[in-house]
Length: 628
Image: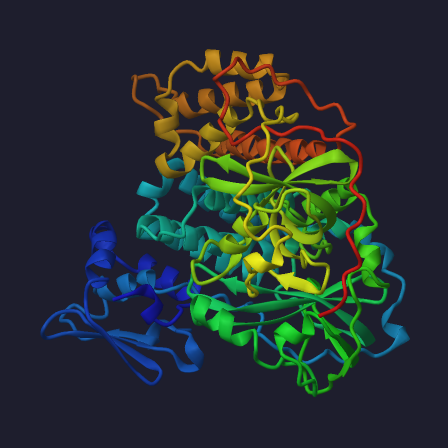
C-alpha cells in the first residue's frame, strides 16, 4: 500500500483516533502503521479498503475526497472500534488541509468603492485572544516535542499532538500556524518512510516557521497580528482589464508526481502574472500540456504560443501570488505580443542586477511574510564565459552588468526535459551575448536557474525547459564545451556560518539528546568568532549548552529536560543562519559592497566549484530579439 492510494484524512480525525487508544496500543502504533503499509488496498468509489488480514478489512469512506469523521473509518477485526488499525490507517494516510485553495475560484463580489474605507482605529490595537494564545502555546509545545525527540522519535503519537494543535489553531483563526504544523507532520512522515524527495533543510524551515509563528502570536497586535494569523484562503480579486505580453513557458515537475507548465506574462505596467496547468502526470504530462490551449477565456493559444504572443483580458481575477483566474466571467482574446527588446517588456531588463536580486531574495526568503508579493525571477543581459565544474556537476558561468559573475544552473535534471542538453550547448559558445530570464537560487555567490534566453542567432526566444537548441544554432557548431577560467572567491565563499547551520540541522533528525553528546564546541565557536560572526559563536555555544543541560533533584534524579528553553535557542539559531545567508547572497550581487571578512583557515570551509570573481565592465544588451 502506498500513502497516495489512501484518501486524505482530516487532522482532527487522526488526533481523535490516536487519543482514544490505550497506552499499550499507543506503543504499538508505529509498528502498526508500518505493517498496514504492506497490506493490499483497493478502491471502490469513495471507499478505500485495506485487507488487515485474511479475515478482516479496514474501510476508509471519503465522500467528497476526504475522510472528515471518525465514523468514516471502520474496521472488521474483533477489537474494533477500540483496535489500533483505525488509528494506524489515519496516520498512514495523507493529511487533509481543509483550507486548501481550489484550482479555480469565482471572483468575490466587491461592493465597490465603499469597500475601500479607512481602517478602524481599534484594528491597530487588536491583540490575540486568550483562546488564540492557548492555541499558539499548544503549537509551541508540540513543535518543541518534535525537536526534543527528533525525526526518529517523532512517531505517530507525537504527530497526532501536532495535528490536534493544528486543528485547534484553525478553529481559533490561526491558519498560518496551523498550515506550518501540517507541513511539519507531512515532512516527518516523508522522513520516516524514506521518501527520496525529503530534505532536512525543508523540515528545519517548517519547524522554525511553526515555532516562530506560535511565539509571535502572544506579542503581536494590529497589522502584525493579521500577518502572523494568516488567511485560510487566498481568494482571487478582480483586476479589471489587462493587456498581457508573453514572456516564456516553463515545465513544472514536482516530487509528488505532478506535472504541467506555467506560462509567465507581463502587464503593461511591468507586473508579472502566471497561467498554469498542473495535475498528476510527471514530466511526460509537462511536455504534452505545453501544446494545449490555455484555460483562460476564449483564447485558443497554447501555453507555448502564449509565451511569445499576447492577450487582452477583461474581467480578470488575480490571486495574491499573481495567478490569473479562469472563472466564467473572465474573457480573453489573442493580441499581439512584444519582443524582449521592445516596450513594455524591455523595461524588465533595465533594473540593476543587485536591485532585482534584492527583490527576488525577499520573495524566496525562507521566512517571508505571506502575501508579500514580488517575483523570484531575474532579467539579465549576460555574456557567456563557459562551463564551471562543481561537486554536483557542472554549470554555466556568465557575466552580467557591473561585471558580476553569475552561475547558471539547470532548473530540472529530469532527462525527459532539455534543460541539461541546452545548458551544455550554451557552454560551447563563450563570448555570446544573451538576454536571459532566471530564478534566483540563494547562495553565497550569484546563482540562477536558467529558464529562458534569447536565441543565439538573435531571432526569437528559447524556452530552455521545452525547446531544444541545436549545434547549428551556435556561432561555431563544431566548438567543444569551453571551461571558464578559474576566478577568485566571492565575499561569502569562506564564511564559517556552516558550522552553526550544521548543528541546527543535526538537531532535527537526531533530537536534543544527540546534540547534547557533542561535548565542548569551544573550538568551533572560536573559528566562527575569528570569521567575524560573534553572534553566531554565542548562539552555537548557547544551543549546545541547552542541549546538554539536565538538572537533578535533591535525590540526584534527573529532572525533565527544559524543552521550551532548548526550542527557543534552536529557533534563534535557525532564524539567524537564514538571515545571514540571505545577507551574504545579497552582498554577492553587489560587487561594490564590502562584505564581512570570514577568515576561515585554508581547507577548513565548505568546498564549492570554481571560485567567483568580479569581472570587467558592464555587458551591453544583445542584438534585438524578435518575438517568435
